[in-house]
Length: 168
Image (tube, rainbow, N blue to C red; front, top):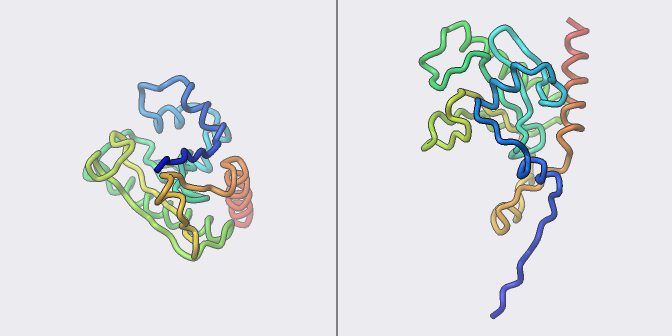
């Protein structure tokens, strides 16, 4: 029986494939650049920042990342940990207003064996979830369908965030 090859066209990935590979920590690099919109940094705080995951599991997949380059949770001062968690809470509220998800996966993967893609810099994932947001694509094609561009997602979240700041 001849097996048919299935293709999924994703031309935007070519920028990543052909792009210059960075040797330094990608989170530190983005934090130190003054290009928040290009880097999808939604907002910065004293000890952490919030950024869109450019390889999201779902629309609105955010990460909360300490400004300080630390791999392990136990290396962090209490002030950093407190700000990380309050920022996770704030980010969940932001996602609720912008996208009205029905649930969330919030997770930390520490170490390569635990699934950390960037293990040298601690970060917390916030993934909005909806009924029916899973389908056959990941199971049979190892492909996740994201229905909105990162730019559109960034702009929605940034607008909701800025509106919240103005109301305070």
